[in-house]
Image (cartoon, rainbow, N blue to C red; front, top):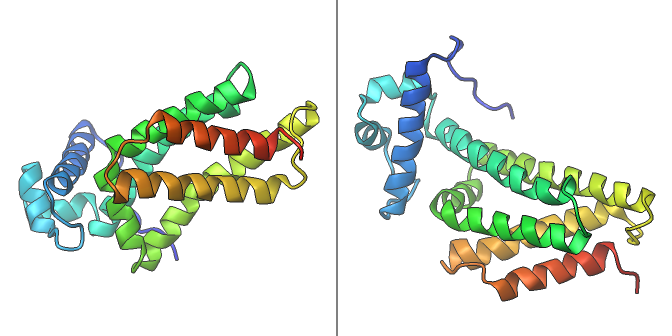
Length: 205
């Protein structure tokens, strides 16, 4: 299913500012306890300082708004994960830096990511969007494993399956800790994740 398209006119300073205000207003309302399912367009628009009619000039519906919000967060997560994919130093040290920062972002954007997971459970478009976002991490992880294999570092026998399992395991772990339980990902949890990644990719037996 295709992602809804935005209005076709080129972005302007005003457009960028209003879209940002809508994104911030939605995350703020979620943080105050509103559920995304019950959060109406008019309430979001008023919180952002625009009219309900104006909202539809910038986003086709709430789903498109949620996609835009989570795409922005995903870019931040990709930047942090890139500390492992293209960073310098020993693999375990790079993984620890990347996973620590990814976990921090999960905590900072917990209400938004929780809303994404809730909507994905009943909305096919949002579910496909979430699958594509995680898929970016799976693909990049697989490529890093293959690069490390070529460099004589990685020992795992199946980069594709290993990347898929590790990525979704990490997503589920951080979601349970920060989104469902509302707890920070402490150092013990980060250490456990790093050990699993390192043993799965770099240590045989």
